[in-house]
Amino acid sequence: MKTTKIVIFGATGSVGAYTTIYLAKLGYEVIAVGHRKSDNGFFADYGIPYYSVDIIDSQNFSVLPEKDVDTVIHFAGAMPAHMCNYNPYRYVDSIITGTLNVLNYMQKCGADKIIFSQSISDILYKFGSTTPISPYTDKHFPLTGDHSIYSICKNAAVDIIEHYSAQYGIKRYILRLPTIYLYHPNPYYYVNGSLRWMGYRKLIDNAIKGIPIEIWGNPKNIKEMVYIKDFTQLVWRCVNSDSKGGIYNAGCGHCVTFEEQVDIIRNLFSCGKVSDIIYKPDQPSSPQFVLDIENAKTELGYDPVYDCKSLYADFKKEMDSEPFAKLWGRKEDYKLL
Image (cartoon, helix red, strand yellow):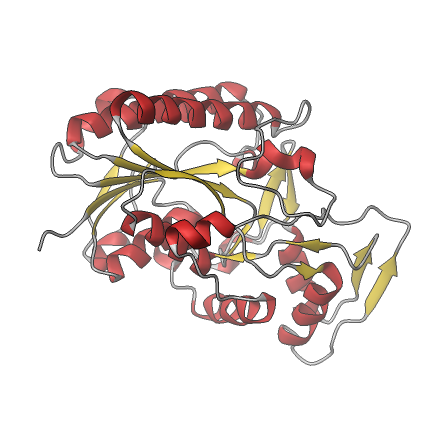
Protein backbone atom coordinates (compact mmCIF):
# COMPACT_ATOMS: atom_id res chain seq x y z
CA MET A 1 0.00 0.00 0.00
CA LYS A 2 1.39 3.39 -1.03
CA THR A 3 2.38 5.72 1.81
CA THR A 4 0.99 9.24 1.50
CA LYS A 5 3.79 11.74 0.83
CA ILE A 6 3.32 15.16 2.44
CA VAL A 7 5.41 18.30 1.96
CA ILE A 8 5.02 20.74 4.86
CA PHE A 9 5.97 24.38 4.30
CA GLY A 10 6.57 26.31 7.52
CA ALA A 11 7.78 23.17 9.30
CA THR A 12 10.16 25.01 11.63
CA GLY A 13 7.40 27.24 13.02
CA SER A 14 5.47 26.40 16.17
CA VAL A 15 2.36 24.95 14.52
CA GLY A 16 4.34 23.48 11.63
CA ALA A 17 6.84 21.61 13.78
CA TYR A 18 4.19 19.94 15.91
CA THR A 19 2.24 19.01 12.78
CA THR A 20 5.30 17.57 11.05
CA ILE A 21 6.25 15.31 13.95
CA TYR A 22 2.63 14.25 14.54
CA LEU A 23 2.09 13.14 10.94
CA ALA A 24 5.47 11.39 10.78
CA LYS A 25 4.60 9.39 13.89
CA LEU A 26 1.35 8.33 12.20
CA GLY A 27 3.40 6.76 9.42
CA TYR A 28 3.15 9.35 6.65
CA GLU A 29 6.17 10.13 4.50
CA VAL A 30 6.78 13.70 5.57
CA ILE A 31 9.15 16.25 4.06
CA ALA A 32 9.87 19.31 6.22
CA VAL A 33 10.43 22.67 4.53
CA GLY A 34 11.38 25.88 6.30
CA HIS A 35 12.91 29.27 5.69
CA ARG A 36 15.73 28.59 8.16
CA LYS A 37 19.04 27.58 6.62
CA SER A 38 19.42 24.82 9.20
CA ASP A 39 17.07 22.91 11.48
CA ASN A 40 20.05 21.95 13.68
CA GLY A 41 19.51 18.31 12.78
CA PHE A 42 16.15 18.23 14.56
CA PHE A 43 14.04 16.56 11.88
CA ALA A 44 16.71 13.97 11.05
CA ASP A 45 16.23 12.60 14.57
CA TYR A 46 12.74 11.57 13.42
CA GLY A 47 13.83 10.29 10.02
CA ILE A 48 12.40 13.36 8.28
CA PRO A 49 14.35 15.15 5.52
CA TYR A 50 14.60 18.93 5.87
CA TYR A 51 14.94 21.46 3.06
CA SER A 52 15.61 25.18 3.36
CA VAL A 53 13.37 26.99 0.87
CA ASP A 54 12.49 30.65 0.50
CA ILE A 55 8.99 30.40 -0.94
CA ILE A 56 9.30 33.90 -2.38
CA ASP A 57 11.82 32.58 -4.91
CA SER A 58 10.33 29.99 -7.27
CA GLN A 59 13.83 28.75 -8.13
CA ASN A 60 14.27 27.53 -4.55
CA PHE A 61 11.64 24.84 -5.09
CA SER A 62 13.99 22.88 -7.36
CA VAL A 63 15.47 21.09 -4.31
CA LEU A 64 12.09 19.54 -3.46
CA PRO A 65 10.62 16.27 -4.79
CA GLU A 66 9.23 16.69 -8.28
CA LYS A 67 6.84 13.74 -8.33
CA ASP A 68 4.64 11.48 -6.22
CA VAL A 69 3.68 14.17 -3.69
CA ASP A 70 0.10 13.73 -2.52
CA THR A 71 -0.53 16.62 -0.13
CA VAL A 72 1.01 20.01 0.57
CA ILE A 73 0.55 21.70 3.94
CA HIS A 74 1.20 25.43 3.68
CA PHE A 75 1.86 27.13 7.03
CA ALA A 76 4.66 29.42 5.80
CA GLY A 77 4.70 33.21 5.60
CA ALA A 78 5.45 36.33 7.60
CA MET A 79 3.36 37.02 10.71
CA PRO A 80 2.80 40.21 12.78
CA ALA A 81 3.72 38.34 15.96
CA HIS A 82 7.25 37.78 14.63
CA MET A 83 7.82 41.11 12.88
CA CYS A 84 10.06 43.51 14.79
CA ASN A 85 10.23 46.26 12.16
CA TYR A 86 7.01 46.66 10.22
CA ASN A 87 7.50 45.84 6.56
CA PRO A 88 4.26 45.23 4.62
CA TYR A 89 6.19 43.97 1.60
CA ARG A 90 7.14 40.89 3.60
CA TYR A 91 3.45 40.00 3.82
CA VAL A 92 2.84 40.59 0.13
CA ASP A 93 5.93 38.65 -0.90
CA SER A 94 5.76 35.68 1.47
CA ILE A 95 1.98 35.22 1.63
CA ILE A 96 0.72 36.17 -1.84
CA THR A 97 3.74 35.42 -4.04
CA GLY A 98 4.75 32.56 -1.76
CA THR A 99 1.34 30.91 -1.98
CA LEU A 100 1.30 31.26 -5.76
CA ASN A 101 4.71 29.57 -5.89
CA VAL A 102 3.52 26.77 -3.61
CA LEU A 103 0.49 26.17 -5.84
CA ASN A 104 2.65 26.08 -8.96
CA TYR A 105 4.99 23.64 -7.24
CA MET A 106 1.96 21.43 -6.53
CA GLN A 107 1.20 21.24 -10.22
CA LYS A 108 4.77 20.20 -10.97
CA CYS A 109 4.99 17.50 -8.29
CA GLY A 110 1.48 16.11 -8.82
CA ALA A 111 0.01 17.07 -5.43
CA ASP A 112 -3.77 17.45 -5.58
CA LYS A 113 -4.48 18.63 -2.02
CA ILE A 114 -3.46 21.73 -0.07
CA ILE A 115 -4.07 22.47 3.60
CA PHE A 116 -3.71 26.19 4.33
CA SER A 117 -3.74 28.21 7.54
CA GLN A 118 -6.03 31.23 7.31
CA SER A 119 -5.85 33.99 9.91
CA ILE A 120 -8.79 34.61 12.22
CA SER A 121 -8.27 38.31 11.49
CA ASP A 122 -10.76 38.00 8.63
CA ILE A 123 -13.65 37.59 11.11
CA LEU A 124 -12.55 39.92 13.91
CA TYR A 125 -15.55 42.09 13.08
CA LYS A 126 -17.75 39.28 14.43
CA PHE A 127 -16.05 39.15 17.85
CA GLY A 128 -17.87 40.22 21.01
CA SER A 129 -20.77 37.76 20.87
CA THR A 130 -21.40 34.24 22.16
CA THR A 131 -23.09 33.31 18.89
CA PRO A 132 -20.88 30.77 17.07
CA ILE A 133 -19.19 32.33 14.04
CA SER A 134 -19.82 30.33 10.88
CA PRO A 135 -16.82 29.13 8.85
CA TYR A 136 -18.60 30.59 5.82
CA THR A 137 -18.71 34.12 7.27
CA ASP A 138 -17.71 36.77 4.73
CA LYS A 139 -14.02 37.67 4.84
CA HIS A 140 -13.07 41.17 5.96
CA PHE A 141 -9.88 42.68 7.33
CA PRO A 142 -8.93 45.16 10.07
CA LEU A 143 -8.63 48.65 8.59
CA THR A 144 -5.86 49.66 11.00
CA GLY A 145 -3.02 48.08 12.94
CA ASP A 146 -0.29 45.54 12.27
CA HIS A 147 -2.79 42.86 11.19
CA SER A 148 -4.35 44.93 8.40
CA ILE A 149 -2.12 44.21 5.39
CA TYR A 150 -1.33 40.79 6.85
CA SER A 151 -5.04 39.92 6.79
CA ILE A 152 -5.49 41.41 3.32
CA CYS A 153 -2.71 39.14 2.07
CA LYS A 154 -4.06 36.03 3.81
CA ASN A 155 -7.48 36.71 2.29
CA ALA A 156 -5.88 37.12 -1.14
CA ALA A 157 -4.01 33.83 -0.69
CA VAL A 158 -7.30 32.07 0.09
CA ASP A 159 -8.82 33.56 -3.08
CA ILE A 160 -5.85 32.36 -5.15
CA ILE A 161 -6.23 28.87 -3.69
CA GLU A 162 -9.94 28.92 -4.52
CA HIS A 163 -9.06 29.88 -8.09
CA TYR A 164 -6.62 26.98 -8.42
CA SER A 165 -9.20 24.65 -6.92
CA ALA A 166 -11.81 25.68 -9.51
CA GLN A 167 -9.37 25.89 -12.43
CA TYR A 168 -7.26 22.79 -11.79
CA GLY A 169 -9.32 20.63 -9.45
CA ILE A 170 -7.02 20.97 -6.44
CA LYS A 171 -8.66 19.92 -3.17
CA ARG A 172 -8.33 22.74 -0.66
CA TYR A 173 -8.74 22.72 3.09
CA ILE A 174 -8.69 26.23 4.51
CA LEU A 175 -8.28 26.17 8.30
CA ARG A 176 -9.12 29.40 10.14
CA LEU A 177 -6.84 29.60 13.16
CA PRO A 178 -7.39 31.47 16.41
CA THR A 179 -4.51 31.36 18.91
CA ILE A 180 -3.24 27.79 18.93
CA TYR A 181 -2.04 27.08 22.46
CA LEU A 182 1.28 25.25 22.63
CA TYR A 183 4.56 25.33 24.46
CA HIS A 184 7.34 27.29 22.80
CA PRO A 185 10.34 28.47 24.84
CA ASN A 186 9.83 32.02 23.55
CA PRO A 187 6.97 33.60 25.56
CA TYR A 188 7.07 36.91 23.68
CA TYR A 189 5.56 38.33 20.52
CA TYR A 190 5.36 41.62 18.69
CA VAL A 191 2.38 43.97 18.71
CA ASN A 192 2.74 46.82 16.23
CA GLY A 193 6.49 46.22 16.35
CA SER A 194 6.79 46.29 20.16
CA LEU A 195 7.93 43.20 22.04
CA ARG A 196 5.43 41.99 24.65
CA TRP A 197 4.59 38.98 26.74
CA MET A 198 1.96 36.69 25.24
CA GLY A 199 -1.04 37.17 27.50
CA TYR A 200 -1.42 33.59 28.67
CA ARG A 201 2.35 33.14 29.09
CA LYS A 202 2.43 36.12 31.46
CA LEU A 203 -0.39 34.53 33.47
CA ILE A 204 1.67 31.34 33.73
CA ASP A 205 4.79 33.27 34.72
CA ASN A 206 2.88 35.09 37.46
CA ALA A 207 1.44 31.79 38.70
CA ILE A 208 4.90 30.20 38.88
CA LYS A 209 6.17 33.18 40.91
CA GLY A 210 3.04 33.43 43.08
CA ILE A 211 2.43 36.98 41.83
CA PRO A 212 -1.20 38.26 41.84
CA ILE A 213 -3.03 37.86 38.55
CA GLU A 214 -5.31 40.60 37.29
CA ILE A 215 -8.59 39.87 35.52
CA TRP A 216 -9.58 42.84 33.42
CA GLY A 217 -13.12 43.69 32.40
CA ASN A 218 -15.80 41.02 32.38
CA PRO A 219 -14.42 37.80 33.96
CA LYS A 220 -17.22 35.79 32.31
CA ASN A 221 -16.18 36.57 28.74
CA ILE A 222 -15.66 33.30 26.86
CA LYS A 223 -13.23 32.35 24.13
CA GLU A 224 -11.92 29.45 22.10
CA MET A 225 -8.86 27.70 23.50
CA VAL A 226 -7.50 25.30 20.89
CA TYR A 227 -4.60 23.07 21.92
CA ILE A 228 -1.95 22.15 19.37
CA LYS A 229 -2.67 18.44 19.75
CA ASP A 230 -6.29 19.00 18.78
CA PHE A 231 -5.18 21.15 15.86
CA THR A 232 -2.79 18.49 14.57
CA GLN A 233 -5.68 16.04 14.74
CA LEU A 234 -7.70 18.42 12.55
CA VAL A 235 -4.85 18.58 10.04
CA TRP A 236 -4.66 14.78 9.99
CA ARG A 237 -8.42 14.63 9.35
CA CYS A 238 -7.87 16.85 6.31
CA VAL A 239 -5.00 14.68 5.07
CA ASN A 240 -7.17 11.60 5.47
CA SER A 241 -10.28 13.08 3.82
CA ASP A 242 -11.44 12.16 0.32
CA SER A 243 -13.66 15.24 -0.01
CA LYS A 244 -12.98 18.32 -2.10
CA GLY A 245 -12.40 20.26 1.11
CA GLY A 246 -13.75 23.63 2.17
CA ILE A 247 -13.18 26.19 4.90
CA TYR A 248 -13.15 25.07 8.53
CA ASN A 249 -12.83 26.84 11.84
CA ALA A 250 -10.12 25.42 14.07
CA GLY A 251 -12.16 25.55 17.27
CA CYS A 252 -12.24 23.57 20.49
CA GLY A 253 -15.94 22.87 20.96
CA HIS A 254 -15.87 23.87 24.65
CA CYS A 255 -15.15 27.53 25.29
CA VAL A 256 -13.91 28.78 28.65
CA THR A 257 -14.31 32.02 30.59
CA PHE A 258 -11.27 34.13 31.36
CA GLU A 259 -11.93 33.61 35.06
CA GLU A 260 -11.93 29.82 34.65
CA GLN A 261 -8.69 29.96 32.68
CA VAL A 262 -6.96 32.07 35.34
CA ASP A 263 -8.11 29.77 38.14
CA ILE A 264 -6.76 26.70 36.33
CA ILE A 265 -3.43 28.40 35.61
CA ARG A 266 -2.84 29.72 39.12
CA ASN A 267 -3.48 26.32 40.70
CA LEU A 268 -1.70 24.16 38.12
CA PHE A 269 1.49 26.21 37.77
CA SER A 270 1.86 27.28 41.39
CA CYS A 271 5.22 26.43 42.98
CA GLY A 272 3.93 26.96 46.51
CA LYS A 273 1.98 30.17 46.94
CA VAL A 274 -1.16 30.28 44.79
CA SER A 275 -1.52 33.65 43.07
CA ASP A 276 -4.30 35.89 44.30
CA ILE A 277 -6.81 37.22 41.77
CA ILE A 278 -7.32 40.96 41.47
CA TYR A 279 -10.41 42.02 39.54
CA LYS A 280 -10.18 45.16 37.40
CA PRO A 281 -13.71 45.68 36.03
CA ASP A 282 -12.86 49.18 34.78
CA GLN A 283 -10.26 47.82 32.34
CA PRO A 284 -10.96 46.45 28.82
CA SER A 285 -12.33 42.91 28.68
CA SER A 286 -10.55 40.08 26.90
CA PRO A 287 -11.89 39.35 23.39
CA GLN A 288 -14.99 37.16 23.35
CA PHE A 289 -15.74 34.78 20.49
CA VAL A 290 -17.06 31.30 19.72
CA LEU A 291 -16.38 29.35 16.53
CA ASP A 292 -18.80 27.04 14.75
CA ILE A 293 -16.93 23.76 14.07
CA GLU A 294 -19.89 21.64 13.02
CA ASN A 295 -18.73 21.15 9.43
CA ALA A 296 -15.28 20.06 10.64
CA LYS A 297 -16.98 17.43 12.80
CA THR A 298 -19.47 16.14 10.24
CA GLU A 299 -17.32 16.36 7.08
CA LEU A 300 -13.91 15.49 8.52
CA GLY A 301 -14.65 13.63 11.75
CA TYR A 302 -12.82 16.23 13.86
CA ASP A 303 -13.17 15.42 17.55
CA PRO A 304 -11.34 17.87 19.86
CA VAL A 305 -10.54 16.32 23.24
CA TYR A 306 -8.58 18.93 25.20
CA ASP A 307 -10.47 21.20 27.58
CA CYS A 308 -8.74 24.09 29.34
CA LYS A 309 -7.52 21.99 32.28
CA SER A 310 -6.11 19.11 30.22
CA LEU A 311 -4.62 21.63 27.77
CA TYR A 312 -2.59 23.33 30.46
CA ALA A 313 -1.67 20.04 32.15
CA ASP A 314 -0.11 18.81 28.90
CA PHE A 315 1.39 22.24 28.25
CA LYS A 316 3.16 22.00 31.62
CA LYS A 317 4.63 18.61 30.69
CA GLU A 318 5.93 20.06 27.43
CA MET A 319 7.34 23.06 29.29
CA ASP A 320 9.28 20.72 31.57
CA SER A 321 10.51 18.33 28.86
CA GLU A 322 11.05 20.87 26.03
CA PRO A 323 10.77 18.32 23.18
CA PHE A 324 11.62 20.93 20.50
CA ALA A 325 14.71 22.36 22.24
CA LYS A 326 17.02 21.24 19.43
CA LEU A 327 14.93 23.25 16.96
CA TRP A 328 13.83 26.27 19.02
CA GLY A 329 16.24 26.46 21.96
CA ARG A 330 15.31 26.44 25.65
CA LYS A 331 13.41 28.83 27.87
CA GLU A 332 16.61 30.36 29.28
CA ASP A 333 17.48 31.51 25.74
CA TYR A 334 14.56 33.95 25.72
CA LYS A 335 14.87 36.00 28.91
CA LEU A 336 14.11 39.41 27.41
CA LEU A 337 11.41 41.16 29.47
